[in-house]
Amino acid sequence: MAPPEGPEELMASQSDKRPISTIVIIIAMQTEALPLVNKFQLKEDQDSVFPTGVPWVRYRGTYRDLNINIIWPGKDTALGVDSVGTVSASLVTYASIQALQPDLVINAGTAGGFKAKGAAVGDIFLASEVAFHDRRIPIPILDLYGVGLRQAFSTPDLLKRLGLKVGKLSTGDSLDMSPQDEASIIANDATIKDMEGAAVAYVADLLKVPAIFVKAITDIVDGDKPTAEEFLQNLAAVTVALDQAVTQVIDFITGKCLSDL
Image (cartoon, rainbow, N blue to C red):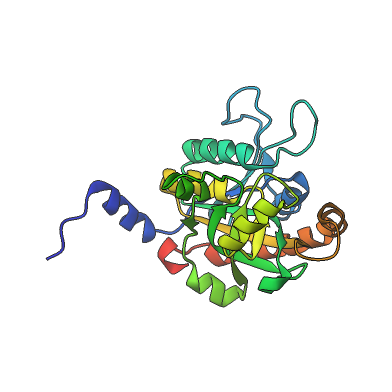
């Protein structure tokens, strides 16, 4: 006879069986966020749920009974550029989960891909697991903490329906790739590389909220072109592909339970 479920297990079981009602989509760049904001006719929240003075922006609205919240970390208050990277991603993910209590977190954005692992510009990936590649701590156990490996929420039916590619995601705070980063990425067996995913995964796991990661490939990390140049060259076109993929994901999850994904 199985032991009785504790309060946390019971709540998790119940949430798996009720329709998803609220989602939070974490997107690092305004260029990536605005097409989805416009498509779902979301409005910028004028009565912010976030602390006074932070640049974080929440766009919200309802689509077919689904409460959608797109969270963009905003512009850096000193330099006026998108607040990319793991620090901002961690902060906005924590604040958003605390304030909005979502059923599901989606981290959507552009990423680099590795042609050696089958990635091409314009491909859309759903990450199977996420890890860091620039937190090198060569001490037993702490080395595993540094890597921070976490599984994404399993969505077999979503994958089957949309036909997305699947790959492991590796996260670091640099757009380029040092030899040390490359060695860690290879150790992580990663197909895609970004600057936010593992940070979002860490916070979502800490607060027990399922998270999935939708990534569109802008540049080939192991290709011939300089990363920054290729990223900027492809950003607009790939953002269109990302917008379409996230729309398909939202259409699929609407009205479904977590266990149906």
